[in-house]
Length: 312
Image (cartoon, rainbow, N blue to C red):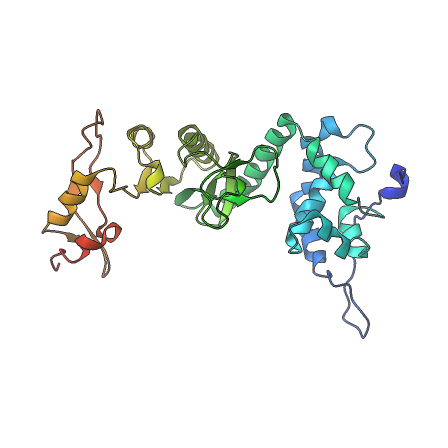
């Protein structure tokens, strides 16, 4: 059954007054705080700019549909069909500016209609929301964490592939690479990838793009990067050194047996704290062309070397 825009959309400018009386409240009354947050961020208006080319002739604006997905996750739901639990809730309708919510088929079609352009605009917007808060905090040091995460799917979703999946072996999945702001736990950007790629696939360009964007947002801050052994390569380390970014990267000892022996044989360590120590070395893999800076090796990375540390 199709509805007109006037039957679907409503306007909600003023926050409803919440009173604690002897009466039944909606289970989602806490959304009144989320409505205030969305208003302060002007989120709905900004989303309309991301999906402007897709809005023509649509009863349910694509920006509103995306906003519903955000509310859906905030309420703790993960599957589209879980929307039936709140579809008649007046506060959910109010925060979205609707008299009735779209059904599952409408939500599914809206997701399929997303274009590369709209996705790009959305990524820019979400990144800018993080940077706005970062500028307010004005930290002296900004720490970026880069790591991949396996997202399993139950069906042959577009773009999935069978790859490493320790929880569901043989399941199709995505393997996105996340850039996370350690100080706030916010995700700055995501590199979308199928599940059969290595951690480093497309990583260098993504890492440098994130670093450049953060540096442009908070030029006064000292940048540092944390990554695991999958990103340990000559090219990435050279790029970080050239950009004067501090970094810590786990070393894959199975690829560098000589380095593991160097650490195991080390007798003199400098104490960092009561748990860790380090020593400086200009060692580099033979396959690398240059090595621009000294490295600090953390004995915590290899169990055998921990017992070899001398007292401070």
